[in-house]
Length: 90
Figure 1 (spheres, rainbow, N blue to C red):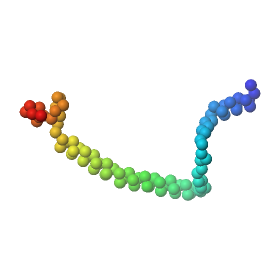
Figure 2: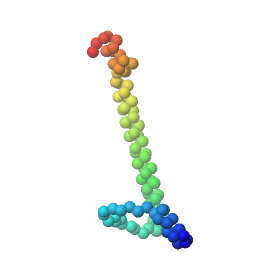
Figure 3: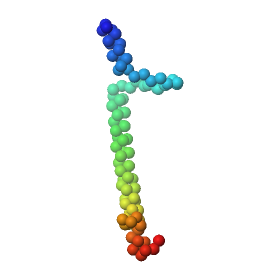
Figure 4: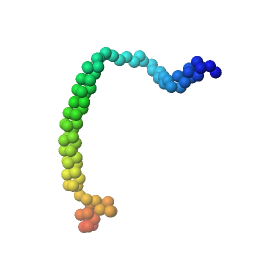
C-alpha cells in the first residue's frame, strides 16, 4: 500500500460527513483582530450583567420555595399529616 493510499484512508477515517436534504447557508463577516477583541469584551460584559441580574431572582425564588415548604404540614412515617394521624380523623 502506497503512502498516498494510507493518507487517503486516514483522511476518510478522520472526516465526518453529514448528508442533509437541504442547503445550509450562513452569513460570514470578516472582522479585524481589534473588532473581535471588542466583540468578545462586550459579550463578556453582557454575560456578567445577566449573571448579576439572574442571581437575585434565583435567590428570591428559592426563598419563596423554602417558605412554601415550611408552611406545608409535615408528613409523618405513615404518609399522613401528624394532625390527622394523631386524632384518627381522615
